[in-house]
Length: 188
Image 1 (cartoon, rainbow, N blue to C red):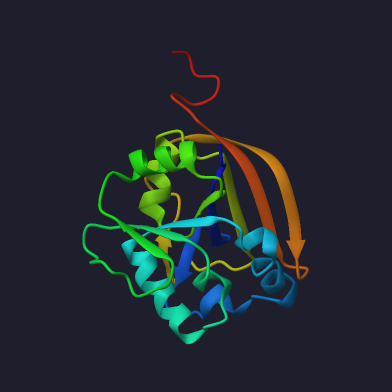
Image 2 (image 1 turned 90 degrees about the horizontal axis):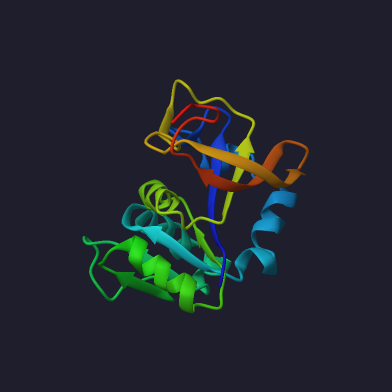
């Protein structure tokens, strides 16, 4: 059964992006960019929602050699229409939790989300996420930050299983998540 990893890049204060800041907050160094395009980082099926699809397919159209162009992608949306223009993209208009549960039973490839905050939140709540990984960029975007990643998430404990420092400044943290029914130590 393949693992499902939720994968985010975030500012130190937990935002997915910031108004008027460049992609990767202008800090995508060579070590990090090489890691993103390595075989181990591109041998999975990518899961995403419509908003992420629109943004990422726009970037991909400008970068034909991007490894995401050749990877299989499953896009969950009731607003997009088939056929999708981005190569190797399958449109699913159905219950994402049930579809991902079935993919975990039948697929041989690991599964990863990219962005897709609502999708990631629902998969975590359903207990389908095996790994939770963030790459923390050393910026605070409180004045211009948008898309707070963890708003609306359930309470979760995280067991650190991997960490790495890229380019002397970007911190990768990989965890095993456990969704909680109550805060740790709470009585009933």
